[in-house]
Length: 299
Image (cartoon, rainbow, N blue to C red):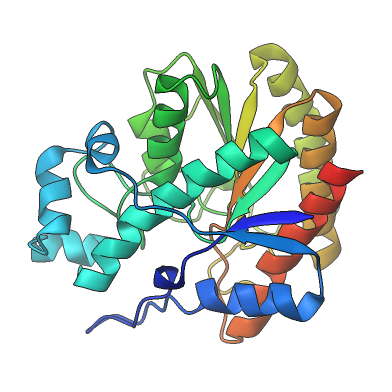
C-alpha cells in the first residue's frame, strides 16, 4: 500500500513572466491512479509559520506571505510569488513532515511535491521558495519524532540550500549525489558530496550508490531518511546531465529502500526534479518511483 501526501493546492497556475509550470504535481496523481496501484491519499496541513521561521529568515518569510518578495529574489526563484504560490510554499513543507510521520508508521510514505532543496536562509532559488526538507527535519527532531535524520539527495542537482541551512547540525546528515557541472554553479558543502561526471550511466551510478549509502547508514545510524527522489538523473531529462535509464532509476530506488528496510529505517520521499516537454511522461516516472518504493517497503 502506497501512502502518499497530496493537496489540490500543490497545483498552482503558471505565474506571469515565467515558463515554470506546477501541473506535474497534479499529473503525478493521475499517473498513480492510472497505474492501478493500491494507495491511500493523505491531505497535509500548511506548515506553521514558526517552523518555517526556525529555518528561514523571518523577514523573507514575511515577504513571501505578504506577496512582497523583491524582484531580484523572484528572478532567483524563477517566478513571482502569487497568493497561490505562497499557499503552496506552506503546504509543501507540511506535506514532507506528514509523509515522514506516515513513514514512521508504515516504513515508507511519499510527499507528491516537495524537495525544494535550493531554497536558502533569506531567499528562494531554482524554483524553490522554502526548503521543505530542512524545515521538516528540524521540526521532526525538535518534537522528538526522530533523533537522527539522513537527507539523501539523489536529484541531479546538488542540494545546496539544504546543505547550507543544516551545516551546523550534528543530528542531520546531508548526502548529495549529483552532476558536478549542473546547477547550482556554486556548490555548498554537504556532510558528504559525490559529484558525478556528465554522462554517468546506470552501472557507474549504482556502483557509487552501493559503495556510499551503506557506509553512511552504518556510520551515522539515522532513524529516518528524507529521500529527495528526483527523476532528473534520467538520460532524457531536459535539465539533467547524467544518463540513467528507467531501469537505472528503478534499481536506485529499490536499493535505497532495501538498505533502509534491512536496518529498520523509515523512508519518506519528496518528488524533486524531473523536466521535459512530455509532462505526463515525467509524472509517470515520479509515480513509478513511489510505487516501487512502496513495494520494497512492503516486501
